[in-house]
Length: 192
Image (cartoon, rainbow, N blue to C red; front, top):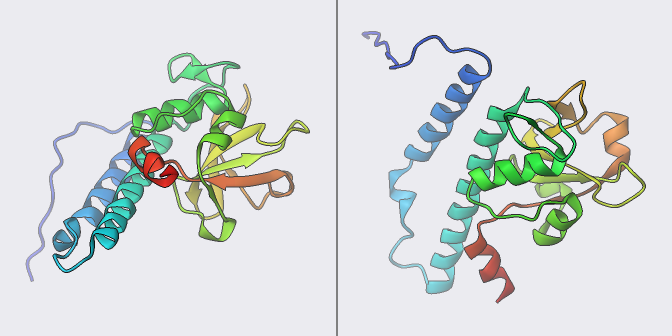
């Protein structure tokens, strides 16, 4: 068996770029492993074909959210912040990341929770939003679940955009719920 090496057309990878590149290659590899699943089989009914489209569109959106989330780890915190140059607050981070993934969402964490469909905790997937009651108000903090009981959020000036564990007692006691980011066309179909 002959060994092959793969050369990537990139220079030195600094910061989180290596992780982002690895995640992107992994996700694109997974997407190309089953080329026949790109279209629903001809014998599916319209409802089943629509459901298959919904599932693929949902999965694609969650993958995009995850990739853009990982890219922002380490960015600064800024109250009211909405961009990676000057920093994010929790809901500004969510709005930015989801916007990059093609999902339009309101600016505040409460409005974000109201805009998206709820998901039970036992059905959480990487890319889903996790909401917390941190100020005695429902949905006062939000992050993005990345798997392994971990989430990413814009925390404070000391930590910035950072990874946290849902198992940490502080977060576990304050978890308000999970919401699934969806493109506008899927949300509209759910409302019909």
